[in-house]
Image 1 (cartoon, rainbow over the protein chains, first blue to last red):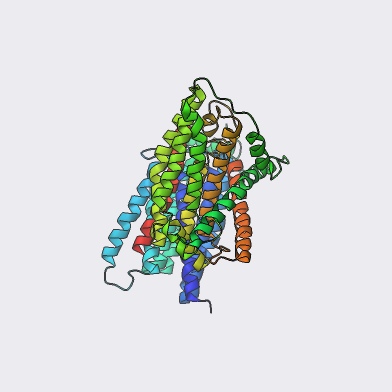
Image 2 (cartoon, rainbow over the protein chains, first blue to last red):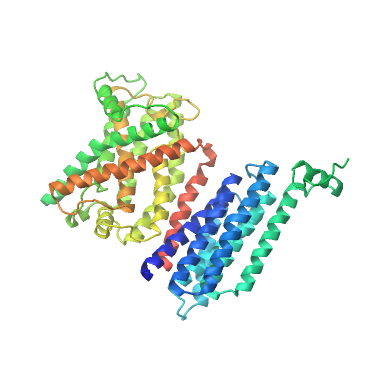
Length: 230
Length: 313
């Protein structure tokens, strides 16, 4: 059996890592590295789930670790990277409402507010002052930081990455506080995969007419079986 | 005054004087390797300083006594600041000195003196360098205070020697969140020692230079002192970062073998950090001057986060 104190320390380090990746996703202007950082963030969630499994021994955590690994570390980043290669956009330097610096500062404020709100809610319960409380704070902050990415970036592909990291926050919160039913977790992941598929459509041809859209799909080689249409 | 304190001062100053040029050369060497060059020898900075010491000093006719005393003042303030950071050995009795606020102001004093030296000779490059240096220092100040406040909070003390002795007694990182403080300290180190995303230490192009612009009018032994002071600043901040994050090998009692181990440990840890700095500099392009606050905001973010986490959990 692994020493529980060691596992707790490990989970805390992983929390720190999750926050660092979230900060990177908020500030980076380089799209390719944002995708790989998202994969790293999901990998950290997998490791957190595995460490929690070694503490608690609940099989749901193991299942969550497996489907998170397959979908969020392998499939989704691979798919987004492929789309990105096709549309040949390497950087995202357009922001509205918030520049990266101000969103970083805002997220500090958000964390403070979340901490205060949660400590009122959990006041007097045994959850207070424990790893689980810390996990809940980090989870909700990650969610809101993802939301900030979603509304402060202009490119569809980064918006989706923000949405994905928001979902990571939900997963983290679910792992530590409420224990979401596994079926819901599974449905969320299916939703995510569909959303990523939709991104491909959005980022390639949202600004075109339907006739033109087919041509575009063809041009980006996303629809190879299609016959040449005039 | 006890004997430990005196020995501490002597040993710390000797170590910082002996080691600091090595780290500067190491950073240069790593940068050269990443560019596919062989790079200067590890002892090049020592040789440069010795060469400059034997050269004649030339003052601009427009310069006043300020230029004449600035190198000495700058060197003196940095050597005093170096006493605040135990590099190789720390005992309980050393704890009385080393307040973080005084440490920060000694660093600021050396910046101020440098900027005066840049302005004094009346050359436009010097003035431009000084103006930029002062703008950067004004923006980085809140971040620096927050980073050091975080350290004070994590270790529950305002003295740097106390922090190092707590870290050395534990032997490992005090709390996991210290990784975040390490990132902030690294950014501070980059800014304070004028390295690439902020300033390019290798260029004399008038549009970009900050630190080099200020020392442009210096020559001979004055230039040697300025260069040595910059090296000491790098060594002191390196020592602070590595001794707090990886406090392995610091001697807590005074013995010859302990000191030898500590010096070797410091050189190994510092060289590793110098390697990281070299790689970091090679992988980044210089940032535009008005984009610099985003770098500082990063350091600010991480250290505020540590305070939030540590206060509340």
